Length: 560
Image 1: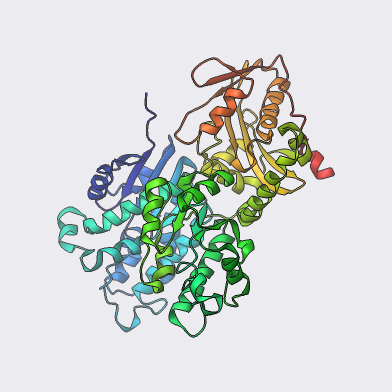
Image 2: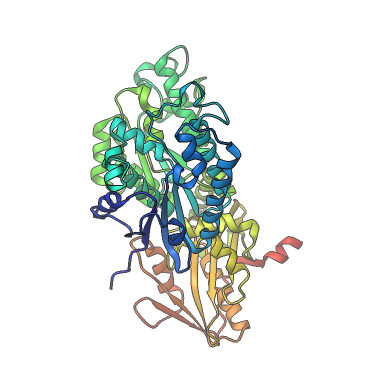
């Protein structure tokens, strides 16, 4: 039986039937869409039983704040009265956040042609200024909760242009927006779901000539490349590189796939004074005359990421076409011929999950470079066990703590390949589990002689059955896969269950299109397979700790 899709509930004080119909027409829709009764926002958000559902809460500013409604009709009001009403609305959202997996809140808008006169942006008197303050209060206070996300509805209205608003349809059907606004909203909702469920880009693969700089380095020489200087195109390439550098600092890796003479290209990178990006900014380079799809596939294998997490940027339409043909999962956007539009085009791509940055995100390029160094030593050892022992791997296990909550929430939300169930816990649910001895969670930090990989694994148990323990969560970053960390994680789960008198540990794998690596591990784990996706360990026998690593508790680590 196919897994039931999660629910998206449309909650609003305006008619969202058109949005609902547009969403339902999509073949790739990841939700079951339900529309709450019109103008019943408080009732729809209250209650329980929504833990796996997403709520879209789309309201009008004049409905949330009656004082703003008066200001919009040119009456004089106090700003403090408006913000008090906004705070009450925010309090309701914060209270509801613990009952929903996610809450999505579009920013408030008024028609762009609504003119407020000379005072429209004067603080305290103009209604446009009031609206800015209202949206600023949303941004400020809703950042407290990681499962509440603001949506930039201004982009939807801008895309629809002059026809975005319809007073006629508002008075007839309570639908103030055109279908073009709802289509733009639907696209943003789908892009948000992709990012929220681990589908964001992790690696940007870039061409060099006329992509990272202007000109062909093999023909023009590095001295004559268009990069910086008193030149519009040169300035645009510098701006493009700075934007890429910023993405790299946010945890998105950069790589090069270029048909060029390697030494000539690297000389340009090293010597050109306007280069923003340096060799160390790239986690992999393929600068040769080989086919680009093959080079990209090699990098994907080396970095152990999914091809769907790769963005390929190349000015050459022939190269883009080849990558689309041979690597259909790779994201290959159309790229503008006008080089002045490169940065704008990059910014417009809805593929970057930039909501939270952990220490692991900031160090991602370094982490993968360390992994490459680690792999390079493998050939000097007679066997895998000898190589693993040489790494000096140290695994520190700790109960889930407040300081690790953001990173743990990120792991649950974005890890797809080594994930037993791909269950996405909200931050509030994780906080609740920290206080529940029958549903413990542990975090795992991994380091070795090449570097510190950080917090890369999670194990969660369900101990509500007095006889058996259920391994409800087994999540690990693929960058430490194959180093027996996953076996150490199973040892911790089994050892804790044994200490509480449970007789067996059961793991129920929920297969997805992406978690094949987790299935492969469970099949080879030594657990008895008792069903298609059910694995059991008899706790009368201790699950062994791998001899090739050191497993220590967080308390021991703190004292060392």
